[in-house]
Amino acid sequence: MRIGPECGVLKGLGMPLASGAEVSPLFGLLTFVLVGVVLVSLVLLRFRQSLLVGYFVCGVLLANSGVLDWIGADSSDLDRLAELGIILLLFTLGLEFSFKEMKHLRRVALVGGSWQVGLVGLGAGGACLAFGFEVPVAIALAVAVALSSTAVSIKAFQDLGMADSPAARVALGVAIFQDLLVIFFMIVLPPLLGQGGNGMAAGLVLAVLKGAFFLTACWFLSRHGIPQILHAVARTRSRELFTVTVVGLCAAVAFGAVQLNLSAALGAFAAGLVVSESIYSHRVLADILPFRDLFLTIFFVSIGLLIDLGEVAANWALISSATLVILAVKFGAAFLAARRLGVALRPCLLTAGALASTGEFSLVLFERIADFGVFDAWPEVEQVLLVSTAIGMGLVPALIRLADRFAPALERYGWPGQTKNCPVELTPEGEREALRDHVIVCGFGPVGRNLHHALEKCGIPTLVLELNADTVHELTGQGMMVLFADARQPEALEMAGIRRARSIAFTFPDAEAAIAGMRLARQQNPEVLVYARAKFTAEVDRLREEGANHVFHDERESGQALIKSVVSPYVEEEVFEDLTW
Image (cartoon, rainbow, N blue to C red; front, side, top):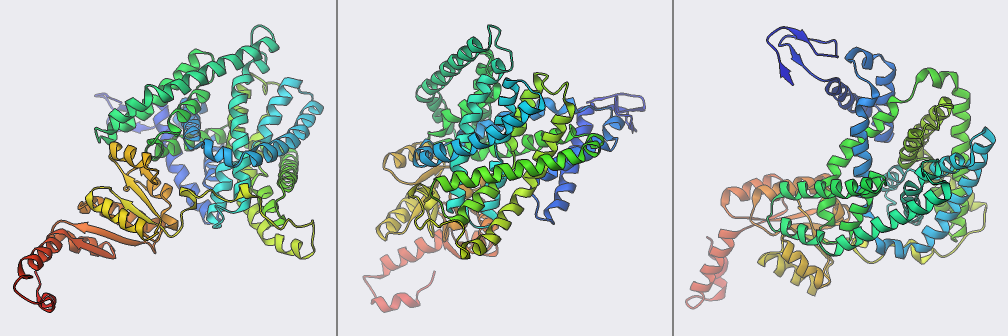
């Protein structure tokens, strides 16, 4: 921003300023985007709609209200920031990708995912060919339409208290298959759409070889180099340096992918995989999620900016028909895929409702396909796909609720035949996700270590949050359930299962940190029991005012122990009850 001596206007914005400051159109656009997202989302939340729908609606309103012309901005001004959203989305996807979970759900992923994607792909590909698209374009669009919104469906299951239900597990397994498909498709998309240079077949082979080489190099770095760097940074106890290191790692690996003519999104996913199996993955995820959410908001708004209400009004019948057909075909495909796995009727219906729409990765692929000029001759097709995706994602929570409501009636009529036993893959493994009624121990110093030892002897499940990298390494080697995470971050508490925990113990005598963590814990689980330590008398009162159920005053406890030890040779044990300190 430059401040001039004369009274002027926002250059390119058309808005007068008393100080004559010059602000880029991007700043004005970001201002309207962020303010608009808040206002629109607050309205939609009253109707129990997904926040993603609010982002779309905000973009549509900005694109069709004349605001862009007034501030002198263009939707392309958000493209670079939207691309950051995609990169961070793929990075967090890589971080959250669990090879152990994939192994546990391999049958669900391979059988359920291949059936769902195959059935939808055949239908969508046939429709694209009938519409006049060439075979490579039809394949690309069919894959994009086959993808579902994992973010919306998983959030809907969480809101209904069914995060670990068989339906949610089937949806997760299919999502794993779709994630792997997206990564592979990002590698082969350029040569598939005629960008290979040596013919499609040669281009596809070269792209696959480049991808294999790149992923192999990332695997090598995940064993030699990056863990050592993260460990050195973690030992500094500097949150700022750790965050900068994480973002720098993501950018560096993505840049390396671009140098091999691969997509930056693929590089970001590989960077997430590099860190996912290390002890630092949970801390990295907690640090990066706020950045991802911000840039993803911008990405979804940028998609909304592409929607032309004039085109929508002119093609409303086609958009409505396409939306209903996509929902119906994907609902049926997901239902058949779940039935193929031997799942009972109710989980089948819930899974079908969760996977019925296209999703966020569909939008990513639509954008990538548009970069190759596929929609230049078919602008109405792009509008139909974008609007159908927005509507479908908004309807997913309602579809899940409807499926849950109608399932008992269908079960009473015995249609179709019921499966008595839930497949073993659909039950969570006995790890962190399966913890119930547990104690979250924050800090593993002398007090935390003794508390954990006592709880373990009593058979009480525990999970430790610790910020000392050496301690986390030690506990991980012992097979203990520990996260390298900060209890003052809501993401860390969520990963620790605070909603399912019975109590949380802050074992360090830092009142400010305990209060910050306590507030976040109570936001997610108002019934959780909170235990805290206080070093001074004033801190005891503060902790109790903040709602700590039990506060242990270090000076008082040590003083009473000292009194008891000194007085015990002189008086009988009953006298101790009358002594205070």
